[in-house]
Length: 228
Length: 238
Image (cartoon, rainbow over all chains, first blue to last red; front, side):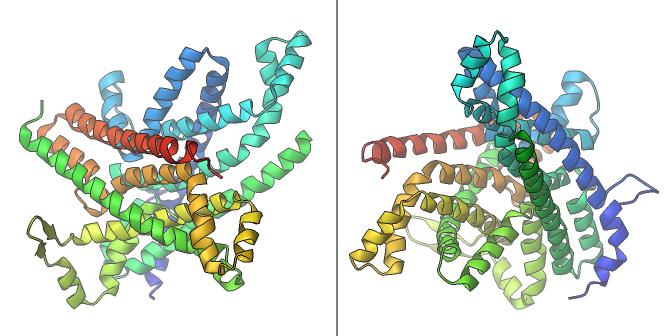
């Protein structure tokens, strides 16, 4: 074991070329994770609610569309978005944006089902009671159903976010300088210490994922207490 | 349209994707069942070992694991062994010829197998937890040893319960095999990128690759439904 290769490149692994260049390394991984976690949660909530509230035919259509996003590898989706965004909308997509869009779409597609299942897990009598009190359907959803359903959905959100942290490494394929990419750069430069480099990177991801898991579990318990 | 030559690239990439996914899934199922056995064993030491194994492989990205095996293994192994591993050779069986896989394929196989095995062992464990304790006691009363109870009584039932979650993991393995393009294995994603670079026919190259992935996933889904109808619905899961 020769850890000097880690020490000598620690700055580069943690923040990339910043402040003399773009942010990279661990910092960029965290930025990618947080932005796609938020975007995928919003998208998942919208899709899940749409599936529950929409007509049966629209729901089937939506389920098929979500099925498609879950059936193709994220790498293919990144390729598609990277290629299609300029063609369809005439914008040259920044690579970071491409990755966030891809991860949010996939995350949203998975979470949509979790959200729909969470809403359906609330007894239908609650709907009846709310409607009997004169509330509109959307009001029942917002005031009665969602406050009960959201804590139940937390486990699927947490699992999805942990997957997201790992999936940010796929930004590597289009050259986004996040943690995995800078690690291969460091490895290519030194070339003699691949074991040290990739064990260290693995450890960093491991800590990130475990921390996310622990933090989320604690928040869920806390939120559960508040709701009760 | 794409010239036949490039269609062939894509199809051979698809062949590698299927081969890698199939072999990894078989190996990962065996390892996953073993790790699951350790995870629920009586010995605390074995349980801790299994838990650590699962945590390590599940909480780090597959891409980093692939880099570790591809670059790391090469630096750990002796150069003689590396030369031996990298030497092309083939085994003729008369009706077909088996070729020695590339080092990229071996590294991809090892990475995908370990990664998938951790998820499979957890799916099996939740399947096992769904089996009533009474089954365990009944088998013990009939004189089965603990190992026989696990492999002959509990595991077959647990596999039925976790059929769809397991299938989901096989689908994930198929999709995850695309990451091996990062270590230079010429599977489907790699081939589509290569065809795109050479022909500039982005839409066709990515389109065909996407259709092939969706097709493979759909076939897995159909197989799952078939097994469910034939073997579980008719006999009852429990």
